[in-house]
Image (tube, rainbow, N blue to C red; front, side):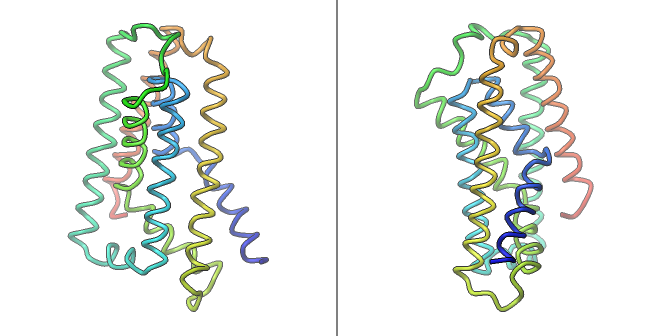
Length: 207
């Protein structure tokens, strides 16, 4: 239990560090309101759960060690982050947002798009698999049972979901300011640059 407590503290600190997932949640919350932001967070969590399960089952080790497979996932992630970044920058340049105050009403399209973008941005980042493989053994040891590994991995996913939902709620509360066109354009420009930066950082290293 002491190892679990240390891991919870470590995971809580880790999820506070801004990364591609944070940028995607911010981008989708601004583009589609609270509903789309929440679904993006759920997509990221689902991806974390999938990758955590793969790590617990030993599949992640195969992905990381098979260079062609690892590189394919890596470059898909780079391409997707670049795509999202370019889309955000295009929105910033155009400044055409329609009814900003009424954006984000719940609907199937909003939910699906948010979930898809959150899931794909996370699942195409091989560093998530590498994280589970590198970090979990530090708290558990090499002989840990699969259910224990899975519990630790899912704990990280749940903590990440909690922080993402807090972020979405904060953005929603600041809606009166964030839906102003100049602010929205500035936020799109910042998140677009951030997404391109994360893609470039992923491209700069092996993993």
